[in-house]
Length: 151
Image (cartoon, rainbow, N blue to C red; front, side):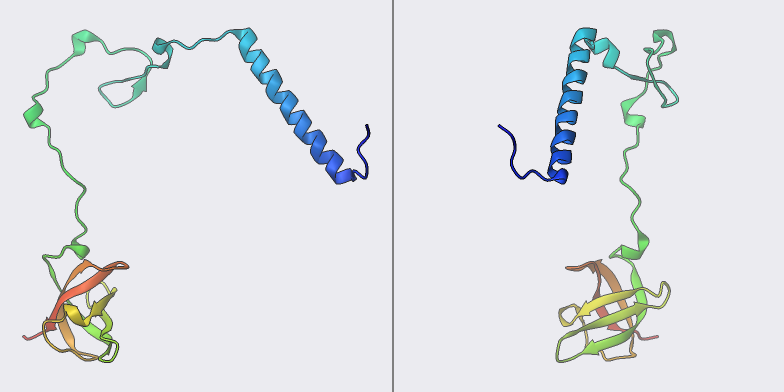
């Protein structure tokens, strides 16, 4: 039975699919005939004393004993900008009493931080110089413990 009303585009798509299927079948048959079976020893890799990956096992005579207590485990260094223990000095760029939020720009880094009225220790208004800590907000870093700067 012939395919009725088959367009040139549909024929081409069908031909490409059949060609791909045949190529896959040929690859599978080729792998079977080669009979390559990977052993565990072929898959294993070693790391030398310089941290390079090699296929040869390490020399047991070069082995050295390491005291487990001398290994220092450490987390990545904290970004001091986001350290909640450090106070930052900044200027209130905008603050809406009605909406109860605004933004504070750090004087050193020129970065702008969101500030909510719940994070205020005393009332602030625009262009006030304030001292604050940087903490985690809902959408990123936010100013917390905000209070007016007094010299």
